[in-house]
Length: 395
Picture 1 (tube, helix red, strand yellow):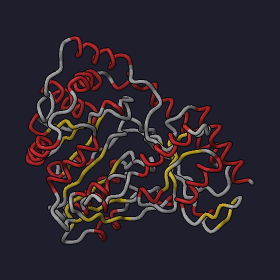
Picture 2 (picture 1 turned 90 degrees about the vertical axis):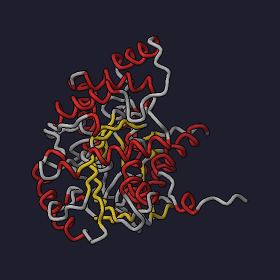
Picture 3 (picture 1 turned 90 degrees about the horizontal axis):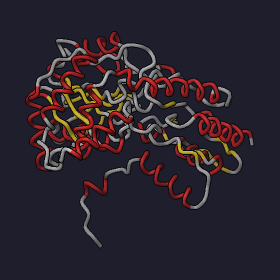
Picture 4 (picture 1 turned 180 degrees about the horizontal axis):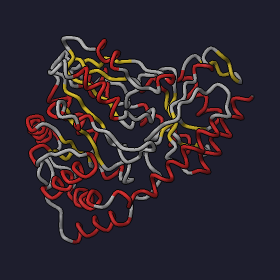
């Protein structure tokens, strides 16, 4: 019997990764599972980025990288922030990490002390709460609903703030709801935050370019919030580079230095070949990846149209990212084809076992009435998945 730490024993397993593992297991048994659980684009990494990686290999990039990233990559990130977000950072404010998830973990570890509270508007990305708890912080969930387009109001934010509040974390476009905070909505939240100058904001903008409603807005664009915002981004989603594992932050220099210090003792610098490729990715005009964004938009229409034909799903149209997050509480308390549906987890497992469609329960995102569908899949898979679900429920 090994004496594992209380830390790891109290940590929840990532539900998205757990469902992906279950999907692979069932596929290995010969079952035809349609996977709509993972937030992973089904596109290949664009050729111009792959060519940059090959060139880096041929140029013998094979040594340890600076802990906070190559200078050339930091400069590309600075230019990207200026071009796309109107944000001005210098090199001392940029830290490159092994994926945006490490960026988030770094920030939590350097900012939180035991008992510090972190406000998480629900639904939130599945790892936020566990990262906060790992850093001995306390997640404070602020519930939203399909009726409010899954957006936290200024009044809710004000009510959630206590003397122990240290941070606010949110994503826009959102994983899992797909909602997007407008500039006006962010300003209204900022008007609350300016009254509480000790609160730091983590703005997760990894889905920035997958936005179907117009301009992307960053909390750091407001002069009275700039010094209190950590802007997190990366290349996994918009550039179809999930496995390349490069994320980064733009932050106040003191926070960036602390993250650099933390990373230096945990992983050191991110992969050298991936960093060189990301320089090319970020320097390219955004229209070079527009074809993927256009496909996501057409898939959004397809899945919404088909899901709207299934009784019991309450849907709000996502404004970005590549997820639909319907409220499925209509089915709670019902028995469908011998399956007792008590909650969203039961419903998600019903869809997996009966319809052979993998989703993720909303419990994982702090929204227990919902489940998440990823439409980062082919049109054929989306059509077949909705057909299977409709048939399974009609029985």
